[in-house]
Length: 226
View 1: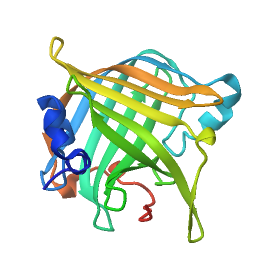
View 2: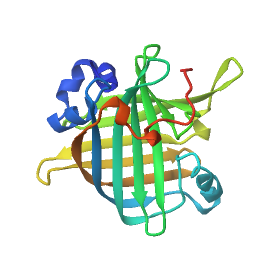
View 3: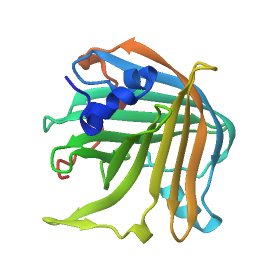
View 4: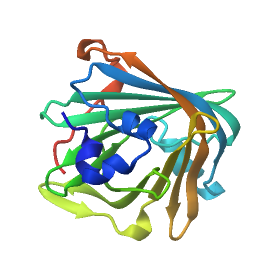
């Protein structure tokens, strides 16, 4: 079975570095999971007046107010079929700050309508985000959010770009250091950088039959609307 990222990239998937191909080839029929551990060199962003809104995201596993350097990091990736039969990849990120562990969760699916990835942020699949994926000249992967929307009754409402945080992700494999490097930023046209983290990690492939996936790999609420 092709992964959702293979579908989104098509033939360009073969241009990825082999290690990135391994990371993004994960699908529900492989009985494996990916566990990545490393260090975020920097976690920054968010002006003082934005902190109440950022703090609100803690319970949704979307945002958190802590910032710092040298933060231990863990990423767990699990693939499964959701209740609607969609191939799904869960990204469970944990940042180990001195006084608290903070989560940033997401579940991604491939949309046949848009021929691209839809990223459901947080643990309740609240507001879906469209993701554009490309391959860099160095064989890295680039992700960029393109739109965000919500549903009101039976209508799909696109959120104006000036009101949302637009995310960019750049990930490469550093052969010299034998690790993945990551740089993620979320910016708003009016408020600047809301959130940024960058660092490096190594990946371990672990056996994971479907029945053994941890409960937190699944969102508390599913949304089938794309």
